[in-house]
Image (tube, rainbow, N blue to C red; front, side):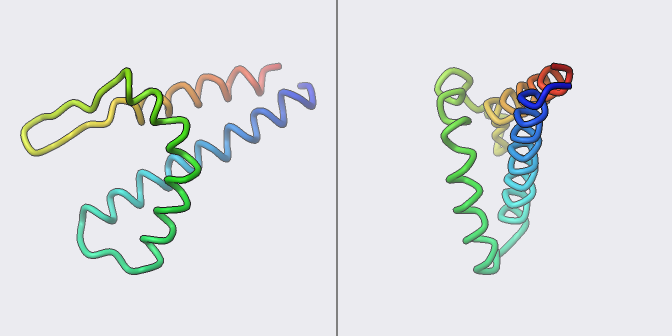
Length: 91
């Protein structure tokens, strides 16, 4: 395993953790009133992840199922990060 592959894999792992945190923070927001720290954490996480998800969202629009909306862009980015992470760690 090369140094470049390890560093890229580490960066992708950290980004994947941010995506998981975004998912959890969004669920907390849906379930009820959010404390102030959740709102601050959400702003930071969105600032880090939205530049990657927004361009994908322009191509893959959210799917509406009644009152539920499934963000396909988030799912596509998450899967892409998993694949790229596996490739980076194999370098």
